[in-house]
Image 1: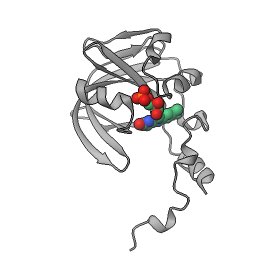
Image 2: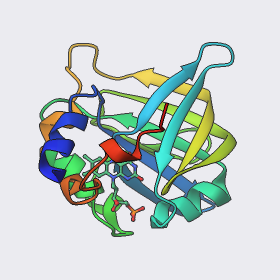
Image 3: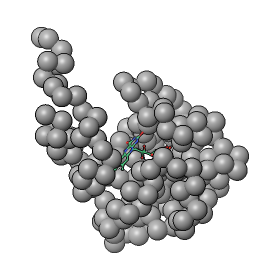
Length: 170
Ligand SMILES: Cc1cc2nc3c(=O)[nH]c(=O)nc-3n(C[C@H](O)[C@H](O)[C@H](O)COP(=O)(O)O)c2cc1C
């Protein structure tokens, strides 16, 4: 059941992003698909992060994050930042925004947000960020879609084996 469930969830249209975090001079970044706009006024983005990620500690300490939108052909970056290492930025061409958050120079676009709220969401934390800055770097490029990452994140092994019985009873 988990393979078909993963395929089902891949039809929820999601992009693929590299989330940058920083506290003082320590920086890291990780791949995320669970990112979305949730408000116009103020402009808010929501991010769902597994609190076991090393990036979560930096997110908590720095109270901010960047969202780097990946381009269609950047599967290699998605895979690179999808691994649990703390030296991932070394091999990428990056700079920082005004607040010191990592910005990938090859990204399609980037946003910088300050954390305004956090909510537990099952095995993840839902983090709300108010947009502080951002830039479209390549208006011609197509964004990478989560479903095009295939089994890169190993999600097929994380879905429950049955979910119909978990639905709330009417
Ligand atoms: C395509 C893809 C999408 C991912 N989406 C998320 C996500 O939305 N939230 C999350 O917490 N982890 C997500 N991950 C997993 C993290 O990128 C991965 O666990 C990473 O190693 C965390 O980095 P860190 O340990 O350096 O913080 C995703 C991974 C991939 C490959």
